[in-house]
Length: 318
Image (cartoon, rainbow, N blue to C red; front, side, top):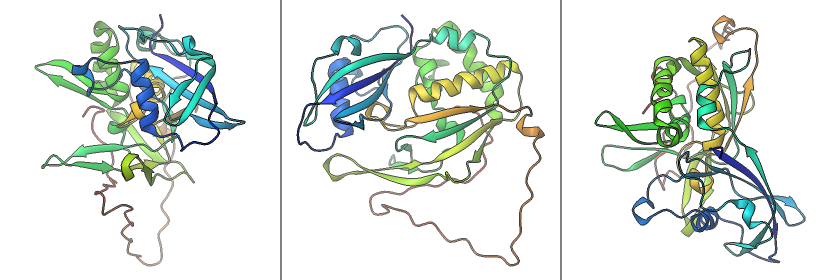
């Protein structure tokens, strides 16, 4: 059975009136579909919920789900639920159709050669708020609202020289791909993809986003688009970069991907020249210096938001 698996589900809502669908409602449904043992309940999920059921009109909704585990198939396939109402909060959603939209194994993604033209650039756009956090010295979680490449691609957690877990695109490979393939592939990533650079997308600036969550809580994240460029490396590095971009859409970005946050669309960019060969645009200088205004931080009373502006110069691993 190909893994990872992705499904596109079309659902019909039977409820006449109901509260809006909430992330925790969807998360509860998938916990019933794909339960984990009590000792694993707080660990990273084997699935990514790529956004939430989005209205299409006439009570129809569109939803995309991904199963990531390479060793264990999902205990329940969404295809088995066509015609059976599923409770999501106050809603009764009936799956009308379920379409498999991704069917490559990790082995094929990590080892098969890519096309004739190597992938060196991609445009990444958020489809839902993306939540990224780190812990400060006191252990408090701090939201980050500026996506550097390291956080976009996730993290691999090691202990005693071995991989013990991970998150995001590289974490999916570390946790779920065949170990004999994962180790060597992650070595290529570590060796060559430190040359990934971030650039803005005109008119699609990254901006702070607030999402109203359960119990009057607000989740801070970001919305927007950016461009990723691989400035150097050999063909094996461009192939690994292409696989990472593929995984980026499948796994999502940041925290709470099991609750639908962090869904992104990735469009590869074909160009005859590498980014290093494209001449940089000259900066226009203002006739006088204008002091930069400190950006207003939405939700400052609820938590600190960190906007990082440094250039990325490290590896893709945390």
